[in-house]
Amino acid sequence: MFSKSLSDDAVPAQVREFLALFADDCADLRFPDVDLDTYVQLADAVCARQHAVDEARGELERRREALKADLAALRARAKQGLAYLRVFAGSSRPELGAKLDTLALGRPPEPAKPRRRRRSSKPPADAAAAAPNKAAPAPSGPIPAASVAELPLSGGAPARVRGAA
Image (cartoon, rainbow, N blue to C red):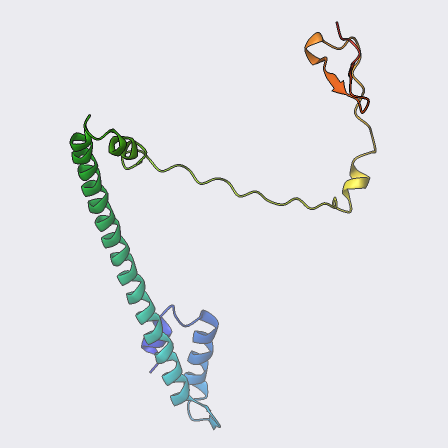
């Protein structure tokens, strides 16, 4: 009675065990909306729905493959057209040639920029305990001449920073 439903993975194992127990030991019991016929109908509906989902997935995969093939054909035809237009533009239509040079039909697409994650302005609660409060050590020794800069002061004349020549 449950052979189809009990062998189908659409029905979870625990439910299949319950259905088998009910069919074997309680098939003649009837409660409101709880009887063997109701369980058979529900289990068969689950199996039929899973079968429909599986078929839809197969159809979706077939359509995705067809879409890939159509896109490949379109891209190949566009590359062919681009080649023809480059010959047509030649030296007589340099503005068209410049526009054609900006097209990326033959180049691989640029990789997507990675998304930037916003950092929380507040450190984790245990971060303060994990890292002692240390300031970065001050650099020692002379400042290289390459790092000398002139800073404008509010008085108008720039002031020389230490180490200036």
